Length: 261
Ligand SMILES: [Zn+2]
Image (cartoon, rainbow, N blue to C red):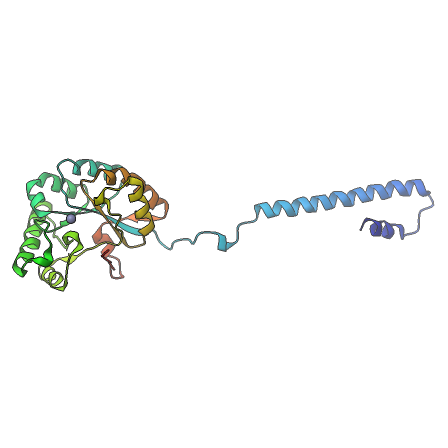
């Protein structure tokens, strides 16, 4: 390359000034070429470093914040509900509580605090029994008694219920519908009621979370409270926004819920 450039430079006839002068000029010209080449290399190399990543390397941008509902079963709990409410307030999250009617009747102030804090208060039957094994009359009584207690506490209409243990059949669903209640199950089941390590609860929630998801957690499980701040932080960092069941159901598309059987 270099010899070819030199050859080209030598092509014009030499001025009458003599060979020494030409040698100096040639050296300067060569250095200029080397400097330009170096600049070009630096520019190209530099441009590679600042070039944006290809689109395929970037995570897909969500069209809207993903929505997910935290739900807490089995309260209100005289030892735990207050701290759970504080934790949710500190993290600016509104959740949905499926409370046992009998406990709401026993601790109406706690149930009222849940509603006053902006959370959704819904029923989990009156005595937490397997609805599949009850007569039609008893299923209705379990649901309607709880609905009445909650409506008296909140002053709002109770619209949803969650069957204990997720046990239901078509008869239960129809009896609930006749009482003005829609069944809510869940899509995220970290099995926190078995009290695993908080890290395990967190990992299971993150692995199962999806847009429009419903997370089943329980009142009265210390490991759940330990995991909760991280669950909230991690889901938010993944683009999730926390909503109540009513907010989730207000979406134009129908709410699709899958029970973990
Ligand atoms: Zn339960």
